[in-house]
Amino acid sequence: MEEQPLKVLGLAGEYGSTSKSGMLVNQALQFASASGAEIVFWDLKNQPLPLVGEEGCWSHPNVAAFQEAVTNADAVLVCSPEYHGTMSGVMKNTFDWMYDKHVGGKAVGLMSTLGGITNANTLNHMRIACRWLHAWPVPEQLAIGHVKEAFDDQGVLIDNGHEGRLSDLVESVLSTARMLRNRS
Ligand SMILES: Cc1cc2nc3c(=O)[nH]c(=O)nc-3n(C[C@H](O)[C@H](O)[C@H](O)COP(=O)(O)O)c2cc1C
Image (cartoon, rainbow, N blue to C red; front, side, top):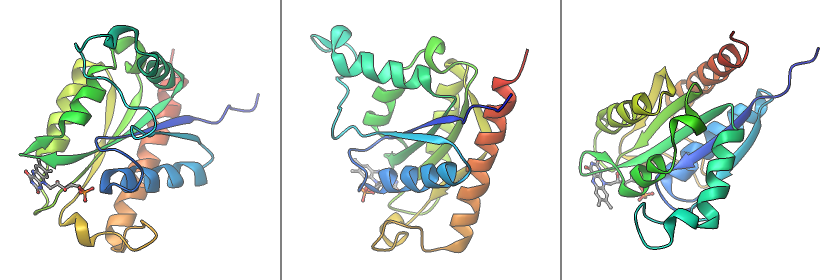
């Protein structure tokens, strides 16, 4: 029987596809699409998520739609900007709307963008959040420092080395997602 294409959801810890994290997630999604995956970018600019705990949040329609999108995905590609040495509040709030029942047992690819020099703080912190969600972040990961100079006018990474690492990360997510889908 022919295998169904993998469904990959892209999440950014900033608003819109023109933010640096939005650009990186979208380039990763393009790699996934070129490998045959069905892709969806959750754009917080169009469908913002309320803060967890604010009035009306538990019955907010965007939350239900978001949780359905995560449930329908086989894998998730995530990119957060680094804010004060960790993931952005927007990214953390997005993680807080996901539970084990939505994302547990699914492959995750982690990326971060930084205004300053590259480090792995945000990646490490998101990896910890994934552990609490019982998700499976792959070992490959990518942090892009000095991000203001990292993309060309089309929103594509300028450095071939970065692009190669992004491609490896996406391939690892896809092969892990296939393995996890076919287990048992
Ligand atoms: C509140 C705030 C805190 C930030 N903290 C850091 C930081 O700790 N380290 C760093 O390298 N860049 C920091 N930055 C820069 C962001 O990482 C950078 O703006 C982001 O990766 C994405 O770029 P964009 O805002 O142009 O989309 C910070 C930016 C803001 C707004």
